[in-house]
Length: 419
Image 1 (cartoon, rainbow, N blue to C red):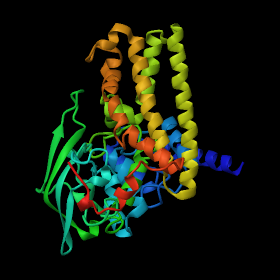
Image 2: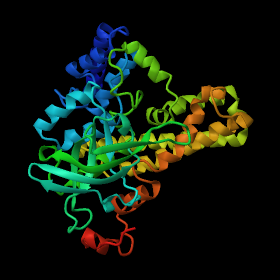
Image 3: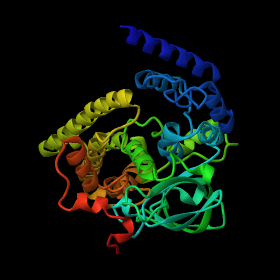
Image 4: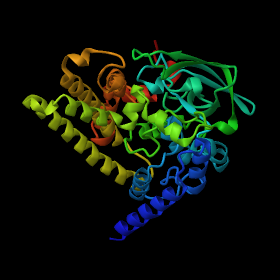
């Protein structure tokens, strides 16, 4: 009962605050700064870091109060989705003071520099090198599938600092300035026509030793924390407004909200959950439940979503006990990819011949089709389905590793065969 009273109190407090302070004519930069200052940006985050230290349950009540008050939310994007949770776990007070204000106020955008073309799904096989030079590190290598790198001021980077250690142990985690000349960002255009991903070339880029996160050689541990948050559908930093951090802060909050609502990018629809609403509209418009086989598929999708919600609740309990998501979130990632595929197939099938069209004249103004074209990425980003199933088998169910993998993990990276 005490928990219910607390949640109700939080809802009332948040609703009163939003009702009093929300003004769609206020510049979005001022609105985001006010949210950060008062702790309503991300209520579950620590006080002084854009949050109020609320429990996940109370934070959801605060979020519901914001929605009910019709107020626009905080900046959302990779900066809040991946970077901030990692910083809150490993950063020093000085690093938090330097980097968190720009994240919660939407003035600094970040990107993720993990994957490499020569490593594929074997992230631990990365070959980007970081060599110590006095108080700095010199970094050389290539990264790929870097979301938002073309607009990013900073990046989180995994690089090899000791090639003579086993591949998981010789990696360090850096916070890198993306604006330096030694960083070359080249956008990759998708089949949707959008540019969400990039390849990044690092030619003796420099990073201060003070921007090493978690300590030298701890990069794998820090990186796995980042990926656990990426696989967590209940991550408070994700949601509506994805990829809009760092936008024009002089626009009014109302204009900014309208721009987000009108976004047809498949990436944003996938991360915000907007595809669920679009599917409901399609099924209503095309009488999707009239066919008995389609009704069965609708029920299967509904059951998958219910399973995902139950698994999310279990994940939240684990986070509350351990402080951060564990390997169990890989279950949510696999379920989420399957939900995406079934959502895509059900919507296109319900449209019939119109499902084969492309452009603004298609149902939902092309938004659902943009989501469909992006759906394959849901099985790759954050670790492929195969990688996540291995994690579930080995780290959740306790099954043995693949033959030869344990021996490979003990060999120095420099001795391992590579492409």
